[in-house]
Image (tube, rainbow, N blue to C red; front, side, top):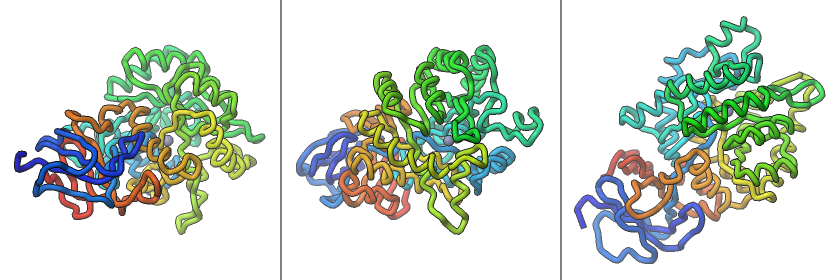
Length: 415
Ligand SMILES: [Zn+2]
């Protein structure tokens, strides 16, 4: 064995099942030389881990934003200068990596595409970034900061507004030209006074976006609240549904039949009252002041997750965190803990590893197989049995992008 090879041993959760004792041997480029069950058959000075450790694929947050914002406030998200977004996102990237995330999907920001590039070129530390760049939305849609004149709102927005199939197609081409590796579309707006969500974009417009995204081999994901928007995006053939508030058994059945991923983003609706005020996060449910937001949220966080579980939907873990005080990057594994209350620890961990990886199109990165470039983490404890063992305090090693990070000692690249 070469001097610089590394061996990690412990329990292994491969994204589906667990073996109680196993090991992974890495070469000096971070490629898996061998993976085995039982005791490591050779002696080596470079063995890490042990019986109280679990090796598992890196965590993937399927829905987050690099907003560089300290606030949960649509005005701030729009007017914050992109330079500040980028500067604040660099430590956010490191925090994500050191809390066990080897990939994230940024679904709308002004910095995501450039963070993805800087990470892949080795300029900054962080997870692999799949990014939509600007999201797509109709004029006057959910994230249109309507107090401003339209031209000003569009100039500042992290979405491109597009109306009619041809503008929608053109907007897809524009974001792909800019480097988007996923298309994010807002298929619903806020809530009307009676509590009914307002669909955004017609099925025709949504179909045009999906077809153009798929023609470029890029996945399309849709923000959707309410039955009408959910039916529209299912009909249009999106790859995943974000939030999915308003899920019913009938709709879930359609989602399952089409193999669409469901990303319930529980974290963003689970706001606790804190010194910064929990109303911040609840403001993500936009619309009339007469809408009972807590009723909508309560149903989503109980009944709708149960429907998704019982219909055996493909569920991915996404936080919708933006990096603000109340949704800090680095705390994103909380989504797995919330999901575990309904799915159990193992299925929730599956959602946050192999499930999310498949949802964002990075299956191969999280597969623990011989000859793969490894992307895995080593935690203390048993996160497949005890969900809180996935917290950042429990992460010991992160292996990503040809490097090994000893998170506990804060040292980079042991290889
Ligand atoms: Zn979002």
